[in-house]
Image (cartoon, rainbow, N blue to C red; front, side, top):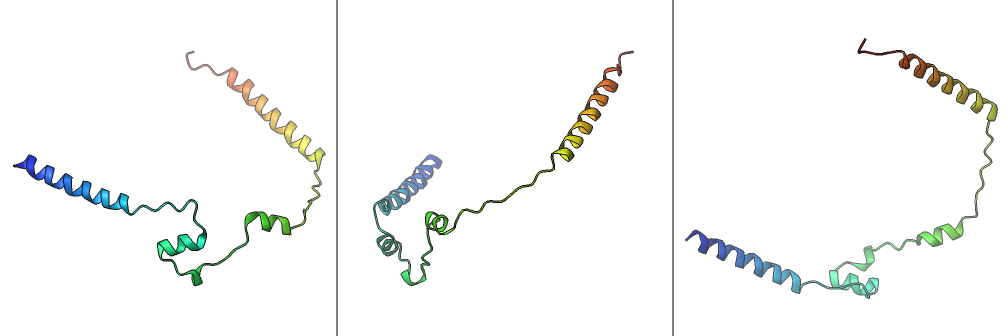
Length: 98
């Protein structure tokens, strides 16, 4: 009896899947207006925006002049490396098995 009910329930779910598959519409080669008609979208609410390429073409290239302070970078780098070297030397003398 249980097996019968399980088969009955599974057959109804298969029927629902077949109905869904038959409603599938491929919109790959459709225009936006055709796809909107298939899905029932109101075309008056669709907002037309410029593409990313059009936005990039409108802008002129902007160059930012970066002024690096190399002396400051060298001082910071040397001090960090000295701290790392000091920590390595201190950790080398630590042996918990003694």
